[in-house]
Image (cartoon, rainbow, N blue to C red; front, side):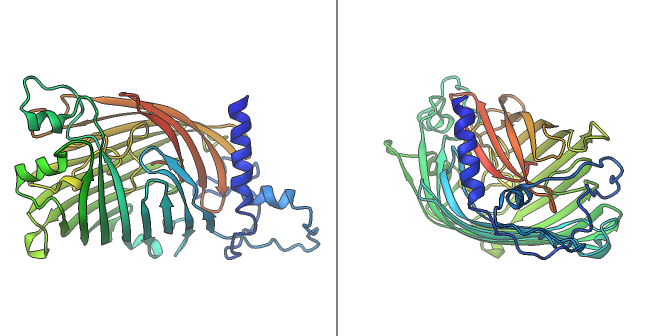
Length: 431
């Protein structure tokens, strides 16, 4: 009961900050659920946070006209967040969705920007987009990032003790889970361009530039995993350029990027760090992102079983230590709920998650999830990919924040091994 009382108080304070913060841009023709190709599934009324405050507003005037007021596909909000990796976060965020063509043949384009500061001394600002032109003929994805980061570091591999390790190997493996803290600044830009070949299938390429500067580690020890790894692989441990080219193959049939009910999303990316573009070393990493959604009820469309697999596989060269794939190192930093970002990492990384999403209220204002995930990585001390696994799981609550874009406020509690656990707050589903 005490937890529910605290949660209710938090939600009221959170939502109180959001009243009157929605621009009036996109028109709604009626208040029924309208889903592309699935409008026959549900007749009940969608109800979101904006509807809640309109109903609670004591100064609201009765609408005497027959014309529906317009509603926005853009959400402006204080970006209050928490997870074990960053601490408590406060900032400002804007998330928008718009169709640049017929909804039946064009996917929703998503735009987001944010500036945030956290109790761990992290500053992070970004501008990102995922744009689909009319009839999905072209798809552009990109982001611009500037950040001062503080990242917790637990070494390389999966934390399973090695047999007879050398001193440096024992520090890198870190079975006691000693905590190192990496401080560094990041400046990044990336842009990808896809051409649709067949319905739902895209091929393309792009460029990425990421500069890490003033890299240092604070700990009670004389050395750090970053310094040891950089010595093993001939990197400058204090700064790095991660610049190169990307080639991409994408296939998607999912009905919404924020909270999908049906379909598939697949993205295969070959990232190639290039010395001639400023990288310290050449490196070749194959990244795969596969997501599948099964709708479990025609009457309740948000009753869904969802599956996600993310992989990053080294096929040549060496990456800088802070660029190695691992927990929370996917493009949207949402993998591995139950652990801090980077808790496990390796030369290659494999991650899978399954999530059960179920409705609570018929109007979809409240819904819930249960999830479980597992991950594995190799290292430079002899552990192979798929040899050691680490699980995590948890559950959460969803509050429909903007019905125009199916944006949910996500409140999750997750737990893993080594005493790892925590509360994770954010907008939109993890996948």
